[in-house]
Length: 244
Length: 224
Image 1 (cartoon, chains in turn red, yellow):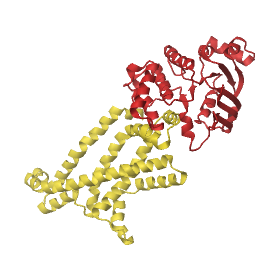
Image 2 (cartoon, chains in turn blue, brown; image 1 turned 45 degrees about the horizontal axis):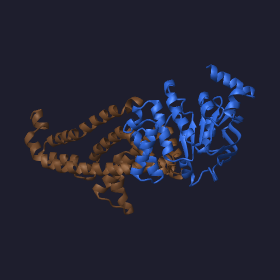
Image 3 (spheres, one colour; image 1 turned 90 degrees about the vertical axis):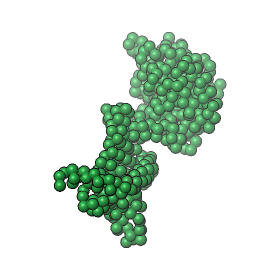
Image 4 (cartoon, chains in turn red, cyan; image 1 turned 30 degrees about the horizontal axis):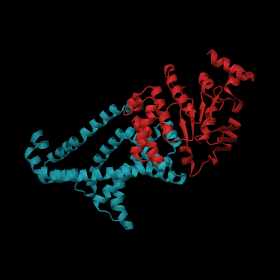
């Protein structure tokens, strides 16, 4: 297996607050890495550092052999890293089809008809073929998030990042989004997912990472993580999450 | 003489009508040109002020503040009567267009900036995450949304520019107001002035109405 993301000694401070403290992480191609942990533990900051939406204070991050850093090549590297946000962040002035088809045209210089053809296929894959001419505001949250996944996939990313993709959804819509994500995982898409969905972590993850106070406390298989938690804090966290 | 003969003297109005129409043509040309130049300059200054390097941002701030503070009439008089002393001699028309464009661009810049700043941060993050560079993101994502937000205040500003064209009569520009005052002098009757006022209203009232409709339609008035 080839490493796809490598994080070395990553630190991130916001003023005096240490959000990430010496993170080291190796993620391999086709892996599904799920990051869990209490709020404020730095999960989102970590995933946002990977595509440089947050600028690391110290340390290095690589996409394959390419360093992810400020500079003229940053847009190209970002285009290779798909990102799905908690609040979808679809473009409200574009139709669903255009949301998915326009970025490859503009960023990858793909032809319009080719890009639209691919966008339609991707939207069909996430079950939205009947909504391609609607605007995002006409869709439910779950549908919007599936469009966002299709939009990220349209760039043919090397790896897909999810920042709490179901946290802004009504409970009945969580399943449809997780199903799409599971389908991508089965197809071998490399994914790093910050989530509170423990069922998803157990079913889909190859590795579960537990973070607390800016550090990685545990990095384990889902079986070990859920069935034989060694760390007292992980047990507490699981109790809290499962009993809520 | 009763009030109708004084202010609504039909024969005088009919006689002065061709003059008023010529003036209206100049008012509209002056207004339209100043609006277009003001929009272009305003957008450029809004972008510099929002995204430019620090020194340019300062320059843009100063430009915007100065031209929002200075009375238009003062600026016009300076450009038309003072600049010739340093060898810059502008026609009445050019001086009027320059004045109106400079002032309009300062207001337009602030309007565009407020629109750009009203776009949720997530939109910019999404475009960055997709690999967009600055100008493509501006064209595909930022400006379409910002412009939609600022259409009502931009239209308001356009109304102001058209109204302010009347100041050009001070530098002997034969615009609608100047023609009306000349017609008034010729006929020794103020009816042409009333005629001019009615023409201003006929042009601008629909625009004022349009602004409130746009505000309601775009639902901006409630959000702000």
